[in-house]
Image (cartoon, rainbow, N blue to C red; front, side):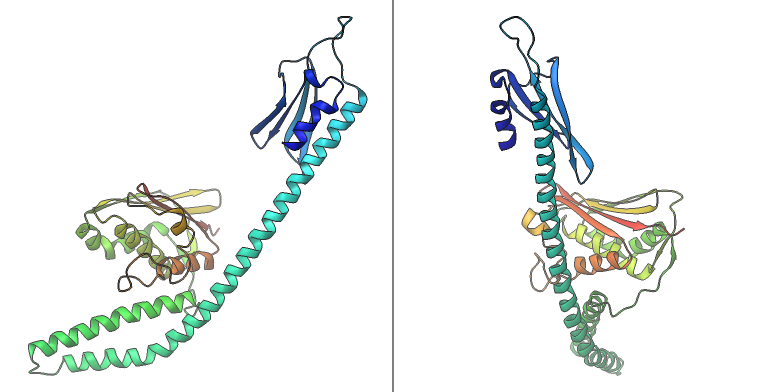
Length: 330
């Protein structure tokens, strides 16, 4: 805007000069720009040698002798210099923005790596005693003549141990301690297999599960068990986001060399400050006894381990939509 403001006063007839900058589809105007003016100058705005728009100057009016105004050669040179300056400013700003984004990503990756190492270590330490608790509780449950209350208590111990084992499994996956076993996979079939486990939970929550699976979907190179974890985690999150019921939709699509998985719900949605943190490990909006905050961190890790990309859109009161892109395997 500052550059545009100095152009009219720098030209021979400032009162009849207008400037327009078209940049990436946005328009800025300074002075009396007349798009229909017959006397116009225009320069491309290049950023890193890529055309991003153009800088135009219009000149209206006529001299006292009735002849139309015309631009001076020096004015054309000035406009060229200013167009280059605009491109340089944009390139510098974008380079700075890219640098900051890369620094944030590196810091995030480093933090995730450290947390992953810690989580994997904790999981290893807990695995053996938990296996003993589970094993001895299952043996004790088989003892004949147990009192009913003792049997109920043992059953509670077994359920708690099995739940803890699932948490440890998530920790191991998050810490990359469970290696991927990739094979050619039909994503549609993995979705069908995964929904078998959560249909009861969905019906209890009055959630309608819809599937829109594209026919002829290309195979992807992936670990089917890890993909099931991705799907189940996203579906369970969607069900929890619709406490009063709603619609959960799973879609698959393919385009060029990519396969897409889209999971959307009609739930409560997320505020921007929550959305920014959902993939951070141990971040959760649930009560302490209702969630570990590992579900979406595990989803994020699995998707990236498969060379994929996960994106999310959400708005408070209007639901959430996850889009996952997997590269096809030819």
